[in-house]
Image (cartoon, rainbow, N blue to C red; front, side, top):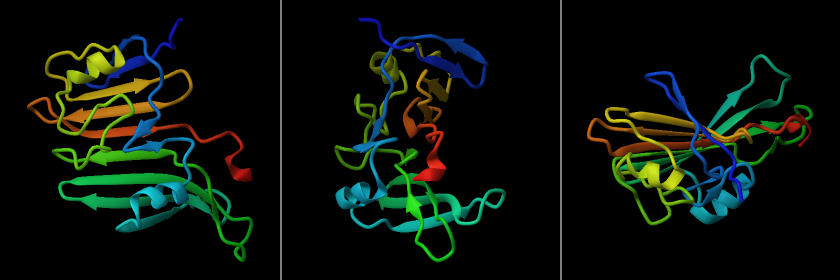
Length: 177
């Protein structure tokens, strides 16, 4: 079985590698592009903070919403897109589009990707999990799969992962949800 090709962009050197792995869609137990915010809140509890970002260039009633959960030294942010047909009806949110996990150590067993990359892990661990080379001295890895899924992994100067982000492209017809 052939696996989809993933392009790895080393942002500091503009070098593209083409390792093989399936797209990663799970972070902190959240299925990016599939789970609703209601499902996320059911599993994680009420967020500590919510921010709305209205789309000032688009139609009225549309924008992005960020939900935050804080647990010790770890922050989880979940982003969705919302739309309302008018000012009277409540906005409808589409599925989770982005999940960000920040910190210097993982808070809990679920604070990892579907394949097991955790906050605080060595950046080199991404090599075995995603089939990518991790050149010495790099602190940011950006992966892009053919289905539009993107994952960014940042590390500190000691090579420990401090940030993981998974993003999916919004559906072409996201204005109709």
